[in-house]
Image 1 (cartoon, rainbow, N blue to C red):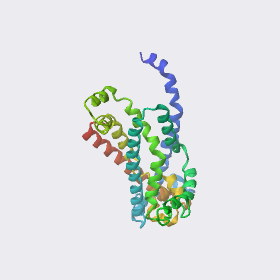
Image 2 (tube, rainbow, N blue to C red):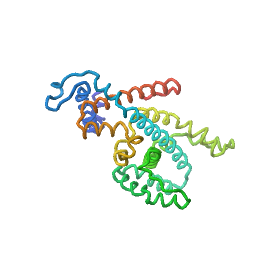
Image 3 (cartoon, helix red, strand yellow):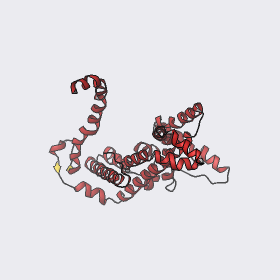
Image 4 (spheres, rainbow, N blue to C red):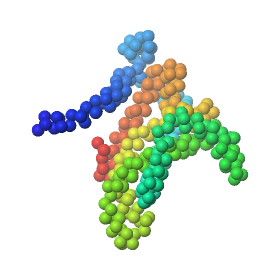
Length: 298
């Protein structure tokens, strides 16, 4: 029976070879280099020839004056992206689900998830010009008598700006999963609700949202693991020294320390710290989801 199953399904397993290879190559092989977080690493001496210093670099990172601000910025930006991204994706999916014209529905959906496929290098270049004090955004708000705002050069405005841009870029793509989940809801439940006189809002609240609640919980749990991933590419493209106070995150700090200043051990220690926190939060979120919603991912 087992041999027959393998013969029938071998093309599916064959398709997994390349993805698994890349996962091993880029996610597991680099774990070999984690050892330099515990060493005074020197490229000339190599991984095992460098002096062992234990937790020195972790203590150095925690005691750095800017580390608390960087950790706070990472957390605030990441949480903002998770909350606004998921909320807007759900709202958009609910609205799109009520559209009956299939052509119009597909057109709107295609337009909204298209930005997901664009690189932040492209989007960053466009919005850098649009958000200048003389850019089109400030010209539009100037029509209402509002003074020009330097969105990407102001510590007050930088975090809201990157959260809004991320939400705009990803909410259409994020809605796809919720729309797929809505198709599995039994249409007879909607018909029964209509017969009982339920309004559109009541149908959404009492039928649609409970019907996709498991997907909402699953994506929320998965997103907790990214709570310290505030978006390296986006921040790197949009930020500048003027907004380091509120815009510098762990990933950009690791980039500057590791690649620009050659502090390999320090940057590896910070990266490992970030990964441990992400793993802990993911396990905690899964535990809470299992306990309070009777739903688990693993």
